[in-house]
Length: 268
Length: 268
Image 1 (cartoon, helix red, strand yellow):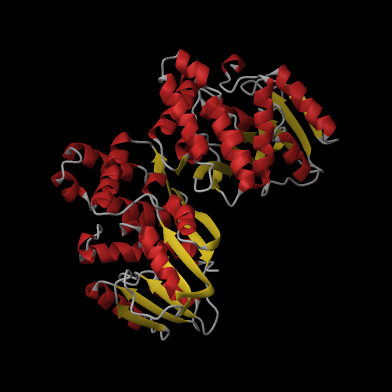
Image 2 (cartoon, chains in turn yellow, cyan):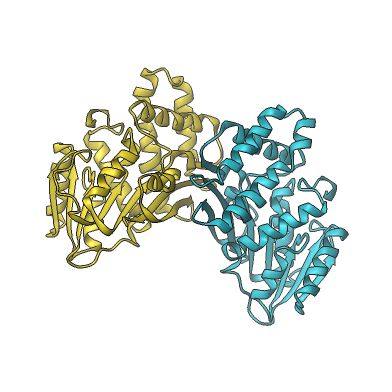
């Protein structure tokens, strides 16, 4: 499945994911901390963008982070070493057939993974077998349908829609954030609590203008220009206007909004 | 201008506004409280839906609430008396030509008003003359472009778009929430801080399912059926399907999202 990963694996993409992580760490991680001694599985750690903040907030938990891509794991390993984290173990594995015994973990953490999976409920069901009774799962996903901005722009919405459509064709769902509650419910988790984490950006928040609107969101949409044109999803001129209009929202009178969703639930 | 008020003035509409207010009070008002002795102007109080929570959170401030509609003020008066609020004075006035001397107020509060005005910057400029130096303005607005849901539905988006278009034709802007920062900036306010107030609704929050998704948002969209059909904005079957699909989001696996924006700023 990794060859279809819509964001690709090139080095610039890794920089984007790192920038995204550092700007959004507080918003996404502030309320996640695991008790000393607990065993935590991060399923689909990628280049480790979430692994470091996760491990830092739970310094005495034991974190096992798995990913299917050896190249991503090498990046993650470098990050773990640079951060001198002692509580992280990295392992190459497919989250659809994990090499662990049932009920091996106290907690599961899954961030920006389900959006790429053909059958997210299947993934959540499989993960549930890894979890002890009473253990928790935390799932974080974005939702590209939550992006709106000022000035509004039809071309920008069409450019964003290219990313949504390419991800759909690769078997994923770029608008999965809003679905966390029904997905966790269908997979049989209990005490489900979903909370939105909205990123609101105007000129009074220059760190988010740079770190989120420009370097995270717009950079991601810019990144699908070639495949979108190749697939005939959009005219080049419309796509380029859309990107221009997204940058326009980073000017002094512009506003950009995007929402991540964080779901927490228990296995009963 | 009041004859163009898109939500109308019938009694059921008042009930809707009351339901909306009681569900959303904490979300919108929790961080608004004015010091004892301060003079506060609520510009465009309508039927008083926000006036009571405003006055309750600032029991020793003196609140002057104005509206252009005598019928709305009568409703507001009844609410003020029923709540035994002693710190509210109601007054019929046009917020475009207020009968007060310059710099009469310490603080301004403007909720769900700018969305109906042809020139919101003109309104904000006029209000600024009512404000003492160092005084604050608080503005709250919704944004119908912030509504998204699961299951998604093109018909539902088209029905919502009818409300947006009717409000635009009446000289208003149903997507003004995202614009609070540039509007306050253009009107020359300082220290502007806008914070989104997102309403996230799933089946684990039954109060919001009833009080917000059904009785506030969907009821409001249902309310424009006749004018939307009369104006030829949409086919009846599509509109009705859209409403059905909005109710569909209130079932056990449904999700509904909407965001209000609250802007606070100072006069220097």
